[in-house]
Image 1 (cartoon, helix red, strand yellow):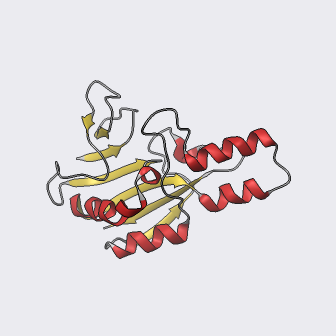
Image 2: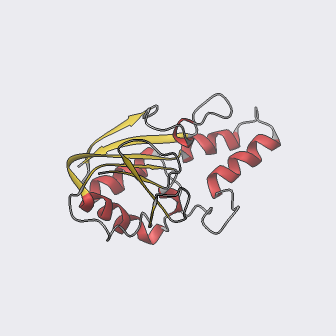
Length: 169
């Protein structure tokens, strides 16, 4: 099984897990509780702009759960808003108030429903610390994954706003 967490775009070979019924076939569940899956039962896990929705106190437990269900040598594809890039943009005098307002919403979540709040800001250092702490190795930062057409490759102002990491179990 390949698991696409938080997604809506259906793709052959991938099962969608979402907190809401977004497609007619997706499983209902949460990244922070993967108890419905057996140990080492998933080949690959993809989570684009999901991990920032996990409460700070639950990050380590959540990543340990991902590590638990991922098969040996499996890949965890993670995309999150890149706090370093977003903060740099906020501080730059070259961007308008409207662009900075949009960037602020990327940092804190659009807050359009009860799920659209961000609890954690990620950069490559924070991501590396947490992933290696739970056992992931061979972390690789990439420009994009080429798997789904989603926010992992979003470039609203000509530069990517996402931090994309492939972590191997």
